[in-house]
Image (cartoon, rainbow, N blue to C red; front, side, top):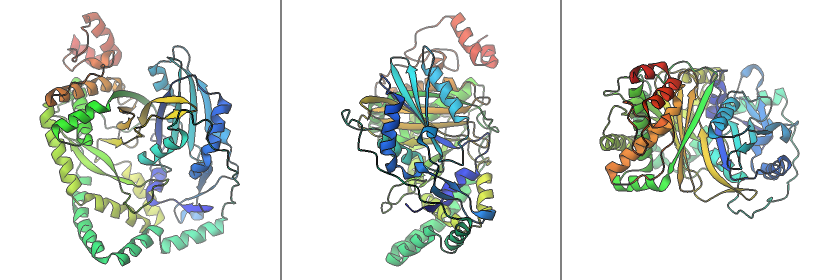
Length: 508
């Protein structure tokens, strides 16, 4: 990697779109069986693997006068101990405490004068376990690349030991301000993305013409979809600085069995159960969902088969209508499956890729303001991202990775985000919410399980994963979901009163 590398327009957009209330860090929790390694043992492992993650030793350098995109340069004062943090939960070290700690960590901004990542070693988790909380700025990685980071730190062999010896590293001096200006001017004249596109066109002219025709058609469809307003919901209001994070674990084998029975895709099933959970939650809040379709941003990979994977972001997304007003699970699945088939066959993905590549031609100041505008838009209700994770069991210094709880950043008026990742025959749903907009986000895991159970019954597949305990199992009309034990009226009043007064009034 050179001593200076320009951020892509997409990577830079995550810097420009960030503000104090909408910090754009990605990551989550990696829950491991114990006992926890010592800090020195953990730090030694990361130090030996760090050469595989060169961006983790680089910081941002701004071009003088803001005439071009920022650049990545080696951090000549890099200190690993600044990025590795160590803490412990007080007894009992339960899931709620871990969720609160994670929320607080993600409420803090990363220092832009240093490499944009942190990795926390958290001890004291119930069951003799420990966790890693990984936090990276979205300018460094997208969801798929974050899984690659996971694969770098963990091993597939529990007896892998400490791994390879540490490789020596010496930072390269960063470029001067004059050089930054010169490099920015050269790349503005011939951006690498444009050069690659022109070279591809020369090598394959017929394919280029076909793709161009599809892209032009797709731009119109993408524009019509992108700028149709999203309906008002309780999820959409200017976000504040505080977060609430919760999760739900389900069986990947059961989800796949439902997919096979209904002859759809895994993503169709995931979106169907998320839509069912959101519909239940909105009804419980008294929101009219009759005919309601939430406008959901679903990220899609933009890397072509000829491109190498690497750091940075190679994704855009599709705007997908989510029919939360359809209560019949089979009808909801069919509607979502048909929509996804239509979008996959459309030319919108090509148009999105063209838009990302063309953005490098815009003046830097225009790109920066465009990014800020994008994060204050009113055209989507939330982001739902599904990232395939490793299916082999992973180990950290011989300790098994038990669960991955993913977290998505919030910004603008998006008060809720849902992230899904699969790992070792399980599928993990992470719910990130603005603490003021959605203090009752803790209900969503129960609603999601109920939605999956309902879809499984309709497909003839038994969902045997135990439901979550507590108020998350209550249905909008106060009746327990299938699999929950009956609760007394006093219990229901106590639990609902803790969620919000409006719900208590409904029970009364």
